[in-house]
Image 1: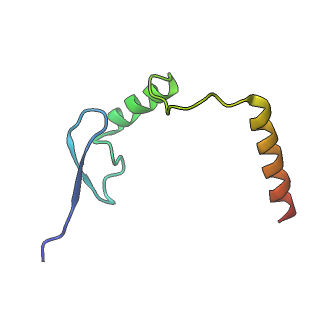
Image 2 (image 1 turned 60 degrees about the horizontal axis):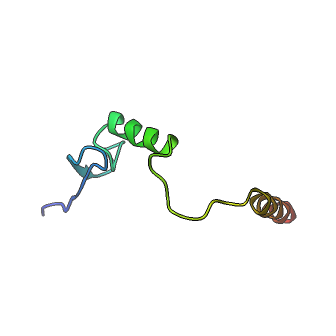
Length: 72
């Protein structure tokens, strides 16, 4: 019986990639494309739209989460 293998385009170069366990870089075709993508996120060329986080609110949320985790 033929195996159904999902194929996707590499987000960086658009090469067709088989989505399977043996492909350690999926959804990328190679380590190079994976690192290029990482660099774009690190340099903030890529970003998820939204309002910037207020540092005080963020710190309060982290502190509250840490307290909750310590009670469990």
